[in-house]
Amino acid sequence: MYFLALAADYDGTIAHDGAVDHQTIHALKEFKASGRRLILVTGRELPHLKRAFPELEVFDRVVAENGALIYDPASERERSLAPPPPAAFVDKLEERKIAPLSIGRTIVATWEPHEAAVLEIIRDLGLELNIIFNKGAVMVLPPGINKSAGLEAALAQLELSAHNVVGVGDAENDHAFLQSCGCAAAVANALPMLKASADIVLSGERGAGVVELVDRIRREDANLAPPHRHGIRLGVDRDEREVCLEPYSGGVLIAGSSGIGKSTLATALTERMVERQFEFCVFDPEGDYDELEHAVSIGDVDTPPRIEETLKLLREFRANVVVNTQALAVAERPPFFAKLLPHIAALRARTARPHWLLIDEAHHLMPAAREDVSQVLPEEIPAAVFITVHPETLSPNALKTVQTVIALGDKANEIIAVVCNTIDASVPQHAELAGENEVLFWTVGSKTARAVRAERPRQAHKRHTRKYAEGDLGPDLSFYFRGPKKALNLRAQNLMIFLQIADGIDDATWQHHLRAGDYSAWFRNVIKDDDLAEEAADIEADKSLGPRESRKRVREVVSRRYVSRRYTAPAEVNEA
Image 1 (cartoon, rainbow, N blue to C red):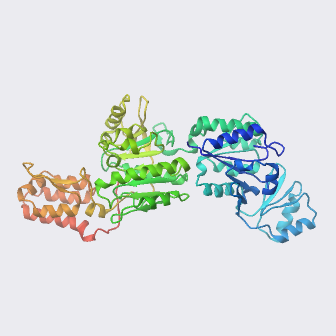
Image 2 (image 1 turned 45 degrees about the horizontal axis):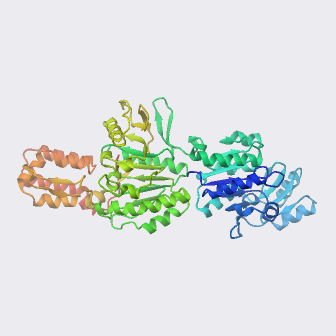
Image 3 (image 1 turned 30 degrees about the vertical axis):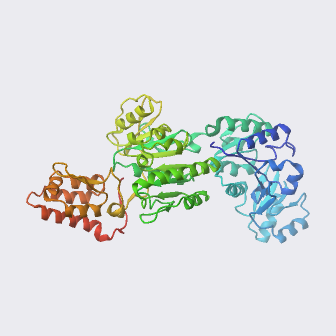
């Protein structure tokens, strides 16, 4: 489920002349029985509301006094979000014989045409109070208190995000809270200005409209809201049409060769998520997102992340989390992921948060060779972005959840073909990438792929020298000293091991890789350090250097850029 809650106004929305009919109550109870939550958002004071609506316990939370008071019907606990009205203000209102006059925990309410007198008293006393109108009602509240603020506080108690809430109302004071919801609905009797800004205008009035809305939420779920309300902007196509990733349109695969820009694109997507206040969690096997802005990182090169700590952070409201498993051995990372993912899936089922999952090096965490992926991975894993160099080695169970492929580089069409062959889909027509920052965008079932000019991140994607100096790059990215006859198979999983092995191997093996340009190629393609690669290439090209001298010079350039920094150098910008 995408929409996990309904936030409804009372008077003029679920209620007619102060009362809620049986059909509406029945529909609300059925809605709650589906596992969703109900929140009442009203300008009424709580004692009045309890008398008018005895079935109040059907709601999980009540936002009363136009946002000033939160009430839990199950526990009967109340929480005020603002102080009581100033005594001097109430005294002056009573002196002026303003009636009717109602004094709540925080709210002061009367009716038109008393707004002029109320404003005069506020001005005379020099008070910082706001007047809110609601179909003739005049409500006075402290600054910052409205239905939107009250709903936010109620959702925090329920561990829900407003993105996953449908709001429905009818009047002026409903506008703020409806616009904060993931989908805004107006009943047929709503004011024209509210209808104009709503995503959905219902055909039924009051309770009948709410019954209609409840039925549509259960049938349509995420499709109820227009894409612009919850889409994450990827970029624009060649016709300048915006292309967005939608959370409930299946998984997303970002694939391309090493160093082509996958991590840079993923970083840009997280920025768009932050702008829209969507929460995300990044699975970061190699520490590439350790300094991602607007996110908290758990784990580093020395300390592995703990599942309990990760879940505690993810439960916090508006928390973005990077799970860095760099301290774990390569073989330990898939089992850790397999243990963590079901916990996150359960959290998302209950709260829909984190809204997005980004899984870097997905082929390592969910390799095709692992037989338990189908047990760990839900049949549907919405709003998940799989990032990989090798889609062909990614678990078929994971690929079958993918509905959108974003392919980068010269082999973009081949990448899409690999996915199609794995999931038994028709390969789309060949498409060319020509423009700067273009990626190939394809959705499963489409006959063509589109070239999209992808968003660029404001923050530079950062590469950590320590990871390459002493981390474990894994079997696929390690350097292998094999020699001219392939008699050896010595694996260097980082630069430190590379230097140690280089010192110990025979001259023939060293010279074989030197003359083949293997060292500079590894530095460029895996270490992703073009400057180091250029220096190494110059050494490789110098035929006058013997094994001892060339070995010495390669050690010097590697040590200068990595070892001499004691692996704690500032992160460098990299287009990974």
